[in-house]
Image 1 (cartoon, rainbow, N blue to C red):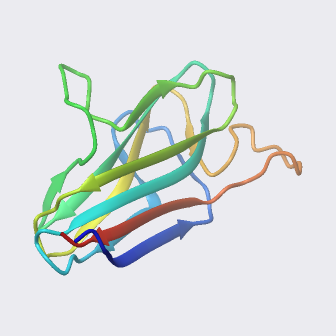
Image 2: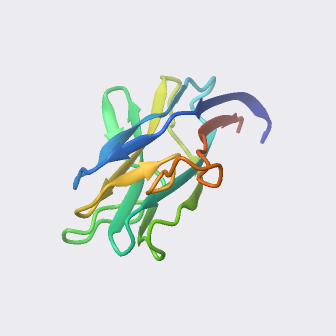
Length: 155
C-alpha cells in the first residue's frame, strides 16, 4: 500500500479574473482522475499566484464532481452565511500578489472519474489568478502559471 499508481497534472499558463460574489470556477485549473480501486486515495495539490485590490475579501475552495454529485473536499464547515473554503482572507498589501498552495488527501471511494476544480469569489472588487492586480507592462510584473495535480495512492 501507499504506492503511487498514476499522476494527472494540469498546467494553466494564462490568466483568470472574476468579480463574482459567489463561487465560480477558475477556468483551466481543472483535472480529472479515474482511480483503479475504490479504496485508493487521491492526493490533490494546487499551486497558484493570485492578486486583488488591498482590503477586499477573497475566498477559494475545491470542487469535486463524481457521478454528477458535487462535493467540496478539504474545506471547513459552513456556519450561517460563512461558506466552506480552503482559503479565505483579505489582501493585506494593496495590489501585491500572494501564493496559494493547497494539499489534501481525498477519499472518493469510487472507481468512477472524479473531476476537481478550484473555485473563487471576491467581495466587491476583482480577483486575479496568474498576474498582479495592476499588471503593468514591465518586466517586474511577472505572470505566473497555475497547477493542479492529482495523484492516486493505492491502499
